[in-house]
Length: 222
Image 1 (cartoon, one colour):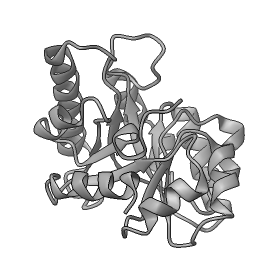
Image 2 (cartoon, one colour):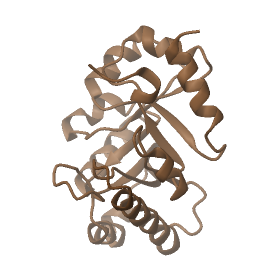
Image 3 (cartoon, helix red, strand yellow):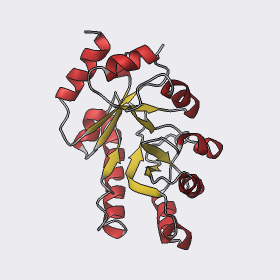
Image 4 (cartoon, helix red, strand yellow):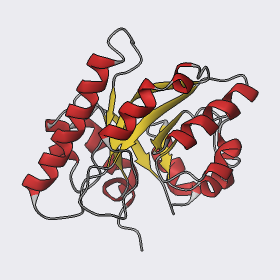
């Protein structure tokens, strides 16, 4: 068995059954992905639309592709026909475009609202106030083809574990507030996507239901 295969098997053995694992395969080859696929894993995440499109054609049809990186508006139409979940909906404009493209394709696309929880300005995401404005808008109520399933966030890249914990805790509070206020009767609004290779254990402790792991499975990127 390859290191990659044993890495994901070991990781999954230590995860609570309530936590989904997205194997982040960005920059990794089709053969690397197949090593993970052959252990029975089916959920893979990519940052870039072009990379998903190039790999998808060469890999089994039952893979669930998750888009976890920043999504440009003009790329939405390429992934809407098949994507399993878009984690990185970071603006009202983007959600509007996803809804329109999904309607054309006769699909409902699962989406997460990305919140800006880090101290770094380079990260994307909504503020809680921006989400409230969107949720209260008349236009949002008329969306038919997006299914909001929860929230996503990326913590600051830092060794300060308390800061990371605070940021994850904040995202969990954002989720709870949305659930209570707008989604209390919605069985689909259940997901908190937070935690990567360096901080997933803290994320799970703070309520994560989806973790996004790359280097712990595939090894460090060169």
